[in-house]
Amino acid sequence: MPSALNELPVRRLTTGDLASCVGLSESRGWPRDDHKWGLLLAAGRGYGIDDPDGKGLATACVVTVYGSGLAAIGMLLVAEEHARQGVGRRMLSHVIAEFGSVPLTLYATETGRPLYEKLGFQAVGHAEMVRGRFHPLGQAPAAATRPATAADLPGILRLDHEVFGEDRTHMITRLPAFSDQLRVAEDADGLTGYTAAWPSTDSDVVGPLIARDTATAQALIASLAAGTDRPLRVDIDVRHEELLDWVRARGLETTSSNTVMTRSIADLPGDWTRRFAPLTVAAG
Ligand SMILES: CC(C)(COP(=O)(O)OP(=O)(O)OC[C@H]1O[C@@H](n2cnc3c(N)ncnc32)[C@H](O)[C@@H]1OP(=O)(O)O)[C@@H](O)C(=O)NCCC(=O)NCCS
Image (cartoon, rainbow, N blue to C red; front, side, top):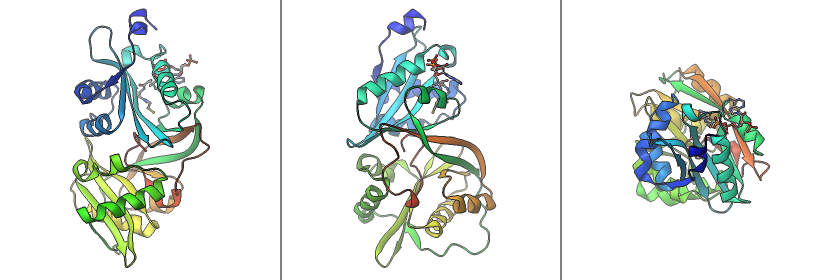
């Protein structure tokens, strides 16, 4: 690593660093995603190393902490001109040391995976990113859905905790403001699922997607699609094959695949059978 960069400390990022984070995303060909960066910098802990020549950030990442049981790493980026010089390793090692024995998780791109493996992460699953315009086909899914109201929030938080396996209150309570649509599915006994659609640069991202079963997940996706003209994007756990086939038949196509990885924990907590998609791959 060049000495000037080597000597600069890893510092905590704030929402004041939003523009530099967006610049870093764009420099690596990722969507700008200002909206997502804004959420992550506010609700999570951002880390960065400044570019020694004052050109914004040389690297950044964000960690979203869920109690003492899990922390999710996301948005690890190294500026192209500083790549393959040990900067990513330094940043990740810093985060690992900061969190000590707290279990860590992340969604790895193909480019990021070798680095994570070297630093003790292991693959525990995969998620397929599908994107496209949703075209309804055949009979509408039967499960009843409706927009969430303030009165639903305690129920959403309870269901989310049960299925995610950790308390995500600080993220989930931001969803009414962060998302364009927040919807629930219910039966006579209460909530059976919920989902949100939030604006990314080129599409509306569906997530979280939590549902009692595939039919409920389908109904939630179809209801979100009916409320937007934009393409949808969703990162579906590949174990939910039936849902993947269903969205593909309705126009969504695989754009990439991410590996779910963990460190200091054998698998993710919670109930994967009801967890269809993360809020964002950057935060679990
Ligand atoms: C992935 C990324 C963060 C790695 O950062 P980096 O600073 O270039 O990586 P480093 O130089 O610290 O390399 C760390 C180790 O991983 C290895 N490595 C890095 N990129 C690699 C690649 N594409 N293939 C194989 N090995 C790779 C290096 O050889 C190095 O090994 P070593 O320390 O044993 O020599 C950076 O390439 C990046 O920002 N990519 C685009 C965004 C992205 O995909 N981020 C990951 C999101 S999950």
